[in-house]
Length: 151
Image (cartoon, rainbow, N blue to C red):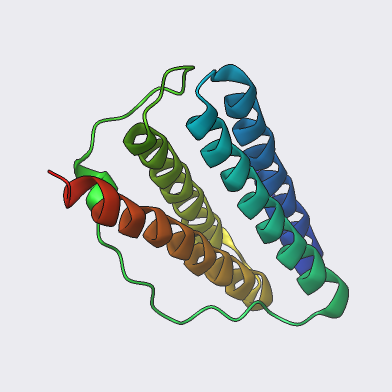
């Protein structure tokens, strides 16, 4: 079981998770031969690097990342089938992968927040939950705008 004794431990864990997402999207970029999908995965990797940078800034300055208390959840990904990453993903499938990845991160932080013994650590996890929910909302909105409206 993962144990966190400080806010820095939490932020280090979150930065490592963001880096894993960057690496995942870079692998997806290398895996696909479709130029449009390469661009999508490169953009997703860039966004995850931005998330990691914000966490690093938070760790260095001790200033929290300001995320609204409540983030809307369109729950689109709840009703979509799982998609396995591969070289021939469509744009809609790439969005599904991204939504589900962000949702899994939010669930992880929710579980860790529930186990946190320290209020400061719990608050950081709660901020990370909202951050991941905001990322998921972005992908759900994109899916709604460019996939569902076309059908």
